[in-house]
Length: 336
Image 1 (cartoon, rainbow, N blue to C red):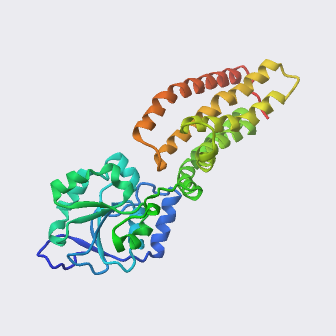
Image 2 (image 1 turned 180 degrees about the vertical axis):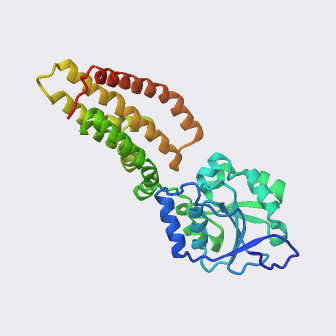
Image 3 (image 1 turned 90 degrees about the horizontal axis):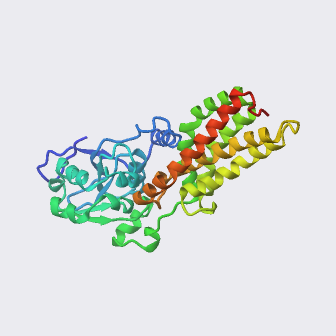
């Protein structure tokens, strides 16, 4: 929608409200459970909230629906503009890491929306978590707008706008159990169908115990790991995930060792070893994937983990798969 401004601009400005509708809440639910995962996005551009004028604040966000809606719903009763960057449907923090919530895109969007003609003030309020992707001095040099970093959480904006000074509490990045499980729910929903298919195949190959191992492995990596992240032993995500994988595999290995005592010990040991070789590296790999969902990882740290651990995990997993195939071919695969 194009609205009137006090400037002779042809910029397209869409009018929005801060109140979320039932349709908005439904879309949030679908996004949280991973349905149409990459389609929850809004059109990039300039939006008017309330009845802004040329002196009204300009807030910058990503075109991920949840990011956009969190911002506008937090600004109830506030007149302003929201400048939405094209982050390809990715949230602010992840997009900043990927570079789509970045300097070039912000400058491009300022020009495309003719923002200089819409507002006379030259201040942009960005979310703090978008800072890694933005070079503030470049924005000022190339567009004339000064970048101001607001609080971490959009809910703190009304208080922040009173002084434009963030308190230490506003700057604090939290990643609580609720936050971790909210993120994990999306990955679990995406993996649910493939997990059930693989579990069904393993049921026919190795019995319900092998099928259960598939479910435990996936849920350990995608659900238990995020929940237990702060308390797991290890110095990084992969080692923490590997520790959890060993813990998850131990009951399966013990059962294989104790099951069918009339069977030769080395066959029972072989079946137990399959679980110990296959489950921990898979859980560790899924744990490593969670680095992209947290607020305290870095590109360099993730790259270091990948190059340090992935080859070792691959060799371990490969050895387990070879052993599993050998036991199956010779009809010695333990069933329970």
